[in-house]
Length: 204
DNA sequence: GACCAGATGTACT
DNA sequence: GTACATCTGGTCT
Image (tube, rainbow, N blue to C red; front, side, top):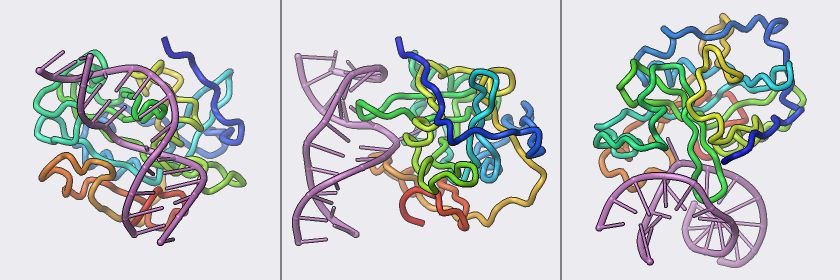
């Protein structure tokens, strides 16, 4: 059993004064590529002991289900680990990798369709180091996300996506990171990032 | 930029 | 039982 972990106190913020609104179900039920692009500029937040912690998302990757060899649901794979991918859009899917890291995904589309968006990087609130959340495992470490939270509903639980009315950031796209084994799918341009952020991981 | 150790859950034989 | 993974930080060139 994996224990809960506290978020980094430097990520404390106030979504009310920032005029952030929690994303609704319809936001997550759209196409996975659309959700992946629209998550740029949105906020991944966690409520912990009555306060909110989080960062502004600046890098994502889309994973397109059974037809996508890089996806955990490739070929219709369905196991205890990836079961949350089959939930309705708006749930959290967290997995453990390389013996020491966690990665968080936002599930998209409708129940039974196993597609998701990997949260690769976020910008911490003003005053925090630019690279505090600049990678999928660092984002999870900063927010205290572990597999204990896999399957949480982002509309009701302690984790949430918040948005602000603002124009979408200047967006770049590239092949996904770390999926060289995925054949043709390895070259698909499904990684999206905010071109003006210093918190994006790796190359542009 | 290239290479690599680290540490263990998970999928599959 | 075995192979490998949606990664990170450090070293060396």
